[in-house]
Image (tube, rainbow, N blue to C red; front, side, top):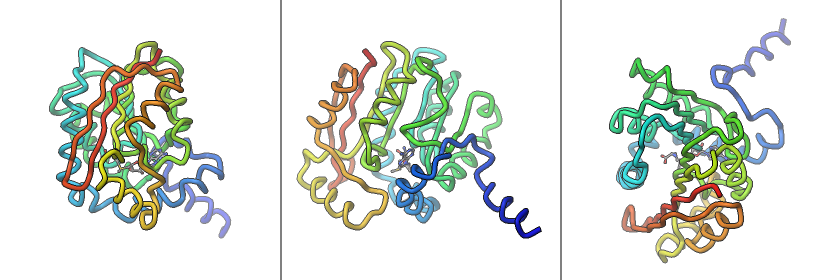
Length: 238
Ligand SMILES: C[S@@+](CC[C@H](N)C(=O)[O-])C[C@H]1O[C@@H](n2cnc3c(N)ncnc32)[C@H](O)[C@@H]1O
């Protein structure tokens, strides 16, 4: 009887397709999951100004043409997915995945209250090195404010490359250490933020993208807040 109960207790995430099966992944991402579980409820308010700036930049860059299949890697509380659906009226399939169930729960609550969205939306518990999309099946991968959490960013780029169609687009946005204030912030976050691995400079990301068979289409950088400089790359799968 007791055994049955403990087996049931482990099924908390079963409403999402889960790609966090191996124990090593769970161990590596333990800090990330703990951190975002703690701040999930306050995430949207806490980073409001910053998120408005980064979301607008991505929405502007997207320039959707029709029914593109979009993946939002590390979709968090689903703000961008909601904007793609509601502001851009996108009709194509959207896959949002995140490694933290608490963030996905908020995304689900935000997105599934809009009844029609259910048909085109898929939410997954997954990580950037392993998610469900088939090879060469996705038109656009968005990775926004996640890259600094990844211990193996190039493995994630490899996975994005795998799922993208030829000439498929990657929109990669993250903190940019070319700004001195963001460099300082990066060091502070490395010390005190369990989910933070490290932030990168423009040239470091440029090199990683090229090394992983992407060609750079455009690049811009700006200050989303007085301390937080960001960069947005658009790259295409070669
Ligand atoms: C700063 S939030 C960004 C959320 C959203 N993309 C945005 O721009 O608001 C980082 C999110 O990435 C998720 N995350 C971190 N590492 C991840 C990984 N390896 N795979 C998938 N999600 C990850 C966290 O759980 C968190 O929800």
